[in-house]
Length: 202
Image (cartoon, rainbow, N blue to C red; front, side, top):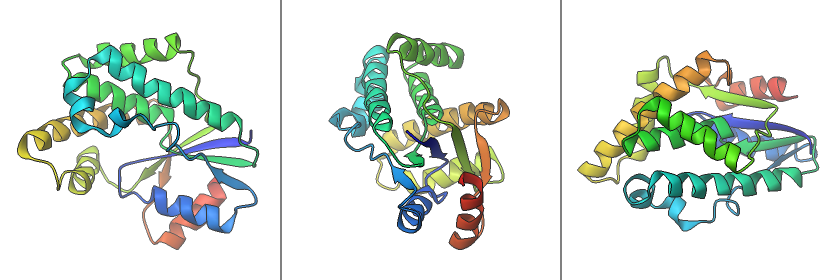
């Protein structure tokens, strides 16, 4: 297993584009863990199950079982650099924000996430967790995500998702303050970002 690097950030920050470029240009050294197989549980992509129908324990067990499967896939990688689209810290933020939607306080939600990872013996496999930053503030980050994600939602779902994003952005802001990510400047043209990224990961 090589050096494991996760790409994190709001939708629209360029993660997917840069992953595709790296795989195209440096395929000898770089591979992507295709999480599709690990996250094959259909409930994961069901809005109602994620936010409304699942109870906290069921939700966390399902999500982190997928993370455990992904960790097993990471162990099988052989190239120098292993890329992840979203790292475990990003999933932690998403999970805790979801629990807050379900009625838990932030500290309770974060502790429940940590307890689940301990129970399931889930380790952080990442050597570097990059956060693709294109926003000047947490508020701008939330606005960018809402614009890309909520166009197809009805009003009730939109309200839930907007609150979820607010909770998630606060948790991510605290994660950044705690140096849990290496903040990466993802502004500029695709080629400018790629040049900076190549320097960073190689």
